[in-house]
Every structure is written in structure tokens, then in C-alpha cells.
Image (cartoon, helix red, strand yellow):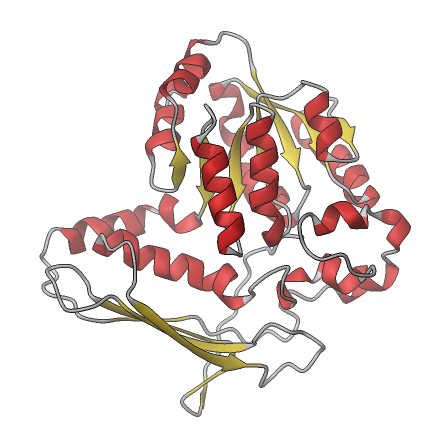
Length: 330
């Protein structure tokens, strides 16, 4: 079992940590009282992935979940009941993040809200003086990416971006092997993710029952254009731009991050993308099939080109199927 000191140090320095403050690190390590955690967004990702991992280490590390913020009344009720049952406490519930941070009741937060909200919610945490574990993707636009980077760099907080492959021992072993040079020269990488799940990212039962009065629609939109309430965009946001890029933000982010990690490459020279809605004509605006080619320039001792191909069903005239059971966040 890792010690609390080793745990905090490893999360601060691990790949995926966006920023680190020695003062913040010393503050946490030197504290005798419990670290108070708030949950921003009671999502499936938090419920089925983040909470079990937290629960396994919370007593050893002296962390406690004390608060929950969610703009949907259903999730507030479900979240309070679930957290109290699993953790045996009495979690305070807030209707929005302003109320959460104004309570001065938390030291750090989990952020597992809609994709396009991650950057804004991380900036809010920085302004409130809270450390944050933020689910990927951190941002869906360059404007949001630059804004959150500036906020983190201008703070004294620790921020880590959740990308599950970075925690996998098998991926670390592969990275060590490739970086040792034993694999030999690599000039191209081809990555595929094939999913034959018509219901992926769909929530029809929840959609038909969701009313505007159940949520804070204006807060949901954060910095996106004001539009009329749409339960599909609230619950099935991964299907619609500008609330998600869909395939790139959900799956390509994992794959291209692996390429950058293994190779040491940071910036591409050019990118070409092709795709569209070919299979699932259910009203979505994001592509259900996509192929992207990244060019990193002339060959070097590092990996120069990666090809990230992410069709949902068809590739070169063949049907490929893969069943994925990882919970999706709402």
C-alpha cells in the first residue's frame, strides 16, 4: 500500500499532471487534518470509476468526500444517497459550483462533468483555491485550452488530468520498452478503435423524462452560445458540437496521447481528417466514422508519423466489431 506522501508526490509529478506547486505540495503533506473533497458532477464516470478508486485509498490517505455539486436535481438526490451509503458520511449538496466554493468546505475537487465544461470548471476550482482531478478531455477548443492553462499556471494548485492509460502498468512497460530502443526504428503508428454499438452515448429513457425545470440550463451551457433547452444535448452531449467533438475527444485523445508519451513527440506538423455520419442517422451532428492522419515531419530518431484511424463500424469495406463496456459519463 502506498503512503499518503508517496501518493500525493506521484500524482503531482505523474504524466498527466498539468501543473505543480511546491508550496501546495508541502501544504498537503504537512497537514494533520483530513483533506476535504468535493464532487463536481455526479456522473457515471465518477460513480463507477473514480469513486471506487478513491474509496480504496481514502482512509490510508486521510481524504474525505464532504460535498457534491450538480445542476440536475436527480443527480443531486442520487449522488447524496450513493455517497452516504458507500462512505458512511453526510455529504452536503449544492445546486451549483458557486454555492459549493462559497461554502469554503472543500480543499480539492473531482471534476467529471460534460466534456466542454471541464476547462471552465477547472478554472473555477483554481479561483477558489482548490486542487483538481479533471476528467479528460481537458478542453474541446483552443480558446478553452489556453484559458485553463493560464489559470493553472497562475495558481498554486495541483491539477491532474484523468487519462486512464497513464495509470496502466502495461502501458508503462510498453513505454519503457520502446524508449529503450529495443523495438527498433518506428516510422509509423496505426491506431484503430472499432465500436459497433448503436446505443453508445445515447440515453433515450432519461431524455424523454428530463424537463428544463430539473436542471440549470444556462449554467450547463457555460461559455457556449445560448440556445433553447434540449434534453438530448444535455444528456447525449457527445453526439453534438460544440458540446463535444465526439470521437476525437473521447477516443483519439487516449490514442494520440499514447503516441506522444511513447515517442517523446510534442507537436505535429500537419493533420488531415476525413469522416462523417454514415451509419447512425439519429440526429447527431458529430461524425460516427473518422480517419485522421498526423504528420510530424522528417524522420528522426523519434517516431515521426502516427496515423490515428477511428472508424465506428466500417473500415476499408470490412465490418469490425468490438464490445466496449467502460461506463460513459453524463
